Each structure stands twice: as C-alpha cells, then as structure tokens.
Length: 112
Length: 114
Image (tube, rainbow over all chains, first blue to last red; front, side, top):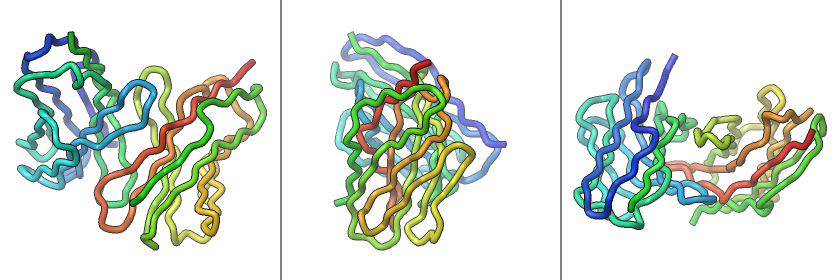
C-alpha cells in the first residue's frame, strides 16, 4: 500500500530564517505531488504541484519554492521566512489528474 | 472560475443520527470530479468519497454517501448513524478536466454529541 511521510510535524522558526519541509511517498511510482497551505480555520490553498522529477508548477506567487529531486520526494523551501508564512502545510500525492489526493499528516509552522 | 461553497460553518448532531453536510459547486466544465475530505483535530486530511460528473449513480463508501444533484450543482455528504469519532472538519473539493489541483470549500465543523 502507499504511504506518505511528511516532516517535521511542528516547527517554530524566527522571521528571516530558512525553511525546508520534506515529503516522501512510498509504494507508488511517478506520483503527482502537491504542497498546500491551510490558514487557521480555512480551506486549503494549493502552493505547488509536480508531475515529474524536476517539474514544478507554482500556483501562488510568494517567497516559497519547491523542488522534486527524486521521483517520490518533494521539498518545500524558503530562503527567508515571513510572518505571513505561518500556517499548516500539507503534502499530498495522487496517481494523476482527476484522481483523489492523499495527504500527509502536515507540518504546523509558526514564525516568531 | 471554479468554486466550492459550504454554507454551514458548524453543525451539531446527536450520536446515531444521520447528518447531511451541504456543498454546492460552480464550474462551466462538463467534466469534473467532486471529493469529500475529513480533517480531525490532529490535522491530517482523510479522503472519504468521490463523485465524477458523468457517474450515473450516487457514490457510497460505507456510512458515507454523496447526494449528487447535477442540475442544482450540489454534492452533499450524508453520514448515516453518526459516531463520536465523526466529529471533525469536513471539506468539499473539486477538480475539473485539465486541472491538476483541487479547489476546496471553507469547510464545515461537525460535532457529534453523545
């Protein structure tokens, strides 16, 4: 069966510090991968998605970036965090377009 | 543009009762898919059920069923025989032909009372 791992579960970072969140998927190959952000009490907003190694599409302009160095690895990064980057970040995978997306447990990011 | 609307910010239901969570959607694309997710307080998003726009029958998964009314553009989630563990946020979402992403509604917080 397929599993998705996301870490860390919680993170507290100062403003201006860098960020690296990692997500890996097991049990499938060539998945579509996604990064979402969820503000408190709100729905999910898609940040990035990837349909293959090195292929990244950005949905929202921001100071975040994503990379996919391996087939089942998806990384969310920032060089300098802003207060507005606080939130709950979720990684997800799917078999392809139109298929259900399956989510990791999420990372709660607090910026001080 | 595609949009999902969930008009119930919160719902309170007695245990063992059935509950309907409302979802309406807006799209001009004839090919689309509708999803429901459950988000417990721990935060993970759990996929519950899927309905395709060309599906003739309403989707069912155990105690979950989707009341799909295409002409009204609604895709309500019905939970039968509610349990305390059903207490969570519930999100309706959609995708459409050519899209890679899901668009989510604002969610409904369901509380099951003993």
